[in-house]
Length: 327
Image 1 (spheres, rainbow, N blue to C red):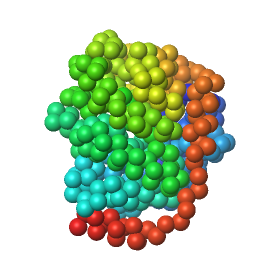
Image 2 (image 1 turned 90 degrees about the vertical axis):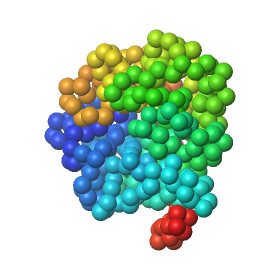
Image 3 (image 1 turned 180 degrees about the vertical axis):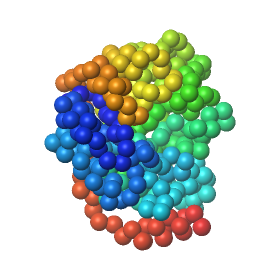
Image 4 (image 1 turned 90 degrees about the horizontal axis):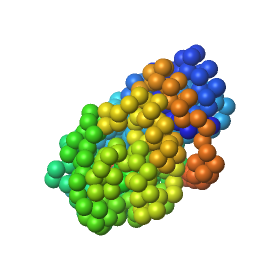
């Protein structure tokens, strides 16, 4: 398998994509709003993506609920921003579990089996608005408990959780989609707060790196392409799940997409994430990424083995419970 996850261009797979995916065999796929119309259309798309590689490849999405959710009404539920729900709910952790168990049910219904959640970044007053209300709390204990509830709900619902943004995005005051954030906090402060939340969740099957410079550890390179930061993630935080990059197309990274892919894999990421569906870029990323190595494959196989058929749930009852918590 190629050490890449790709996003198709539109709501159905093209002939070019079918041939390209069959040839390159990416580890998995990721979907965005441009890929989504109706439940039936989405089921056809997820089926055709797996058919193109002739295996049960993981299909990812960003369905956090709130501002970041690719599946929206009228076919799917609308959720509060996570930070708002945590503040408003009568029992925040139970409400977090119910919310994410409903999300998992929506995903598996259309053939999606991995979600880019939970977020273990800790909200700060200065956290950039692109991220702040997507987070779960302002202290390590709250964030870890809420992230664990989110992950457990996903796993119970047959969906693999992707822990993000390792090793912590909360102190960033810039949007990494548009620029490279730099965090100048001393390492000791990071270890007791930012990194501590991820350490407590290091057993989760998959994770996503942060495009952020932590100047006290590696002043030159963002975590995604920093061998020093990968040591922090693997050794100090202890995360040994499958580690994917955040989107290679984000402007926090420099160089061509091929150079970005090469740098991330060399630093220690297992797979690279390319989201925009552009043909020339996908070809360049596939060529640069090459095949997954044995360690990456072992992590991938451990993660995929955690997919399971979910037990049936009473959806109207869970919907009523969530409404009660937020009433």
